[in-house]
Length: 348
Ligand code: NAD
Ligand code: TYD
Picture 1 (spheres, rainbow, N blue to C red):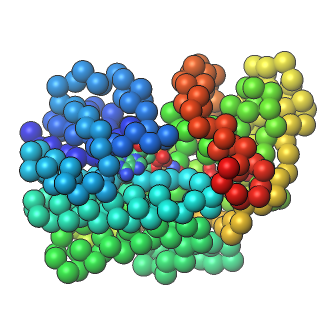
Picture 2: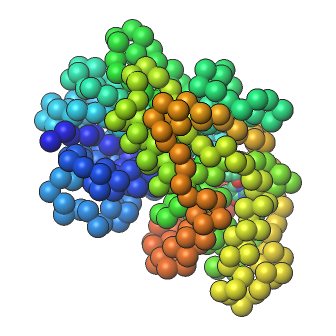
């Protein structure tokens, strides 16, 4: 049975990917996760006793631990989700982003090279291409024009991966995904934040004029894309994965309000009156648009969850899992929230 080392598997996207691996076949999964504020083993509670699953708490930047893990597990493949993933946090403090996203990726590559893994899949983002407002949709060979410290750290990680490919002939594959949404996303990101604040009758913060556009991809669809690349992608290649259909942030906020209105006392007008236009995020990209024809043509991937259906399912999931939401915001969340929404960009 092949062992896949998944890093960051207690996070939002990694946990969905691990569950998909479990359903799809005869894989053994080792999940290496540091359990930062964003990591929560509860996301994988349903499989924690599965004999094919093993959790190891640790930092991908810990060279000794990573080498010992490779020595012991001899993984067939690595899928690297572990990262500091939130743009606003990278504006408050870029340091951890460089440490985990860049140095951590290099530590994994080094071990993967030493132990000759068959595949190294790097989970990347459309944000490495920078703002595509007024440009053609990004192709896999479009220039990297990262805007935020987060995006720059992910672009740096992609370049280190490609350098290991070219220099050491490593079987590296990169998948650049658009914005994900779905169950178990940490409520610092737009969609779960707006749902939670609506459920708690709090303000709904919209950055700038709310006209920025994103390509929202359901996490089940992205997980299938990552698995397709793991199984059938060509080493050395980059694959964009997105729906190609964009919405403005204010459209997303209004759709969430419309879905929640029949379930609460405020009604649609009451919910919409909670929208607050707040100072824009510094360096905010207006648009991320990618061309994902390559993964569609080469690997047959296509998104299956429409935004309408996906948002409805997601809103219902959060209504049904408010205990989980409150559990994950019980730590440093309020201090983070106060720091970001003060819009002074000072770490408190
Ligand atoms: P997340 O923040 O929900 O989870 C990140 C996970 O990584 C957490 O479990 C955390 O504990 C773990 N982690 C952080 N630092 C670590 C370290 N040093 N060592 C080991 N584990 C560590 O992130 P996510 O939204 O699931 O994103 C997963 C990956 O996908 C990231 O690489 C991100 O850049 C990328 N991505 C995310 C999106 C999105 O919309 N969320 C879109 C495109 C790409
Ligand atoms: P986010 O979920 O942080 O993802 P990313 O910045 O990686 O795209 O934000 C999505 C969009 O929503 C982005 O344009 C910023 C905007 N946004 C708001 O308007 N209000 C908010 O409270 C948050 C968190 C984001």
